[in-house]
Length: 85
Image 1 (cartoon, rainbow, N blue to C red):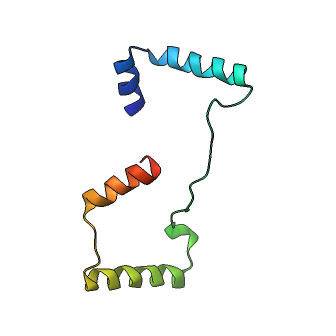
Image 2: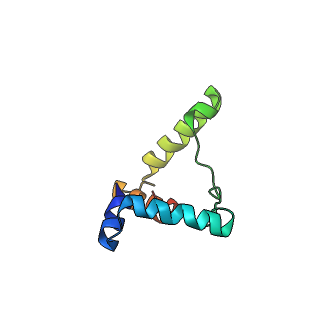
């Protein structure tokens, strides 16, 4: 888990980090950070009609055919940058 690795580097046990978080919730009377929804909601196949799903597939195939593609590494880098994934 990434959080455990960071806390380990900081020399803070997970249980202490959780305690610090909960103390900050009390002191700030809420979460100690801002929470936002992503600016752009990614498409979910389950939320699309069959027609919409087929349209999205056709867009992808057209991009592939025209050479408008990105490497998996560049996509992963962008997802990390844009969404922290």
